[in-house]
Amino acid sequence: MAVAQPRCFIRGLLMENRKDIEEIILNGSQDDLSQLRLWLFKESVRLENMESSLSERYKKLEEDEIAFKKKMDLEERKLEAASKKLNTDKALFEQRLAILNNGFEQLNSDKKKLESEFVRLEREKLYQHENEYEALDLLFRGVNNPLALKKRYKDLIKMFHPDNISGDQEMVQLINEEYSTLCRQYDMSMYS
Image 1 (cartoon, one colour):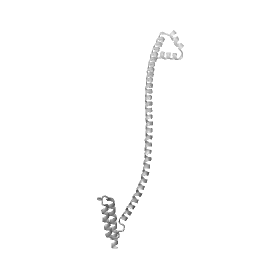
Image 2: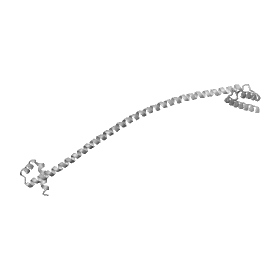
Image 3: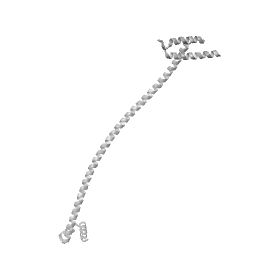
Image 4: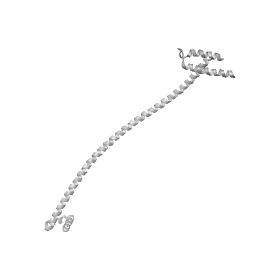
């Protein structure tokens, strides 16, 4: 404790007045001078330790700052690359969307064309069936009894048979349908 008192005393003196330290140096006892030297030595070691610690901390902070700057640069480059990729993806998406929209418009246009073509074909088909029935009516016109019907049927089959040069399978089917229809009509009229 004797050492602590002079140290405190010296610290207090240092804090209060530097002239007092000079006075201890000039007029102090041997014991006060050795205490002052010891305190100055310890204070010097402490200050050097603090300085080296601060120096190490400063170096560490500089290294951290450099590492942080490198990391920030890297992150900025990543962000820039991601931004470019996002812009590219956005442009590509918009391009694909435009292509899809054009495709949908084309499909709608084609659908309308197909619908109008379908309506036109249905009309033609209906008109064609009407003409076929009119042609069949012409083929069996003037037939007024079952024997005349049978003779006309045989003549028509000979003309339109698929083995002939002018043969037509569809026409033969239509003739057969009309013949069976007319046969039923004559059978019904015979019973009535």
